[in-house]
Image 1 (cartoon, rainbow, N blue to C red):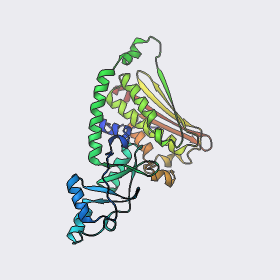
Image 2 (image 1 turned 180 degrees about the vertical axis):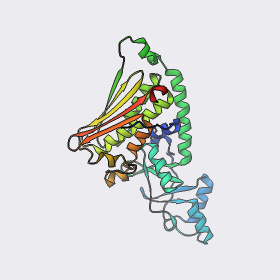
Image 3 (image 1 turned 90 degrees about the vertical axis):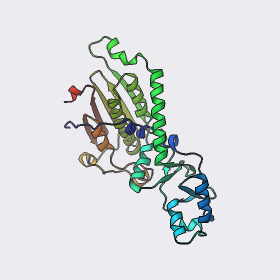
Amino acid sequence: MADTRSAEITKIQELIYELKIEQVMTKSVITVTPTQTMAELKEILQKKRISGTPVLEGDKLVGIVSIEDLIKSLESGEKDALIGDKMTRNLQTVYADESVVQAVNKFSQFGFGRLPVVNREGKLVGILTQGDIVRGLLRQMEVEYHEEEIHRYRASHIFSDIVSDQTGLVLRYRVKPRDFTHGGEASSKLKRALERLGGSPQLVRRVAIASYEAETNLIIHTDNGGEIIAEIMPERIRIVAIDNGPGIPDVEQALQPGFSTAPDWIRELGFGAGMGLSNIRACADKMDLTSRMGVGTRLEILFYVNEETRQ
């Protein structure tokens, strides 16, 4: 496959793939019930200095109501209207164990000011705003900076300290199918290894995002999971994601942005938007995808360490 010119990846872009929603969400959630009035909602929003809140009926999430709903109700002279009559029932939620990138995509797609956060059993466990994401990203950037200052060690000299005709390091990560709870762990471990080996921040970010997308594809589309193999050498990094089925019917079609064979229930979880391979290709210097139905798929991603090597 022809070379692709990878885009510059920022630290923020890297972190939205790595952080989980539960790490940035607001856990102490103020809620209301459908039987409360809009006048009561006004008092709650003013007192708590918030702009919206989930609506619970017992312990069941049934809607969300915002300051925009309140303003419309007051302008119509319906301050005693029930919250249940004015709330938004067509909910979009996110899971606590999902990557922040899933929430970013939903904020962009729907334009909401907040998203209720639920666990895999559907119970409300938090609320997420775009402000929560920004604050969480800033906190994590500060934490990582101090951790690297404290824990940096001589692993970055491994290639110069070990004498051989060709020195390399191979890392292998097993990925289980449908294991969304642990999704992103392999790419996160690889990222940490590259940081400790002294990889440049920009290179590490590109590898982290590409390997996250490859890992997610193994989780979504394979019957038995697969393996991610990272071969790290002084001049380049090669990532190989392999599985033994079911295979891709049309590789060229699969490479088209937005094309996805993910079932509806996967899409409802916030995955399978059809941008994974496109994102990988944007990050990589070279990418090659081969697949045979009933046999398996092999995705190879190549990154050159030095800018002159990439020309």
